[in-house]
Image (cartoon, rainbow, N blue to C red):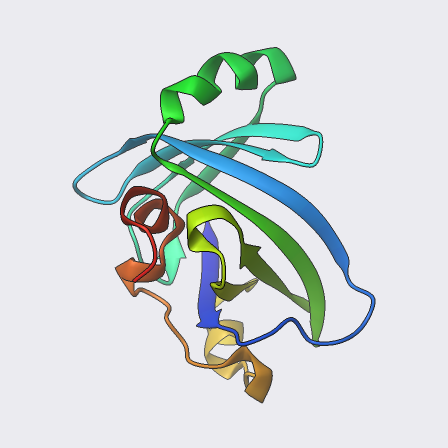
Length: 151
């Protein structure tokens, strides 16, 4: 289960943050929002299945080897995003994953925060730098960005 809120960001906050390069491509996206994707984050490769949009979603992430990733990657042509993810502590043991998109999505920055419970999600007070909340706004879902581009 994934409990996550998403925000638009104007800039990555200053400081020395952990970061990683991410390439992800969509193998399938259903009309109901169910998605199957492959991702390379630095050297780690995964196959992920997610349920449709919303605050609470089912997510299954399965590690795959590099050979399998390379064989599936061509199937995602035209349905990809590339981004650099910055990891920023936001208090109470929570981390904002700030994504700076590249390629056709250059200039777009979003932040996602995953919560241990719906109650902690509701109690979260977002720092001002997070900007406007877009949780549940399909225009900012990575699968929509991969299929249709920036809103």
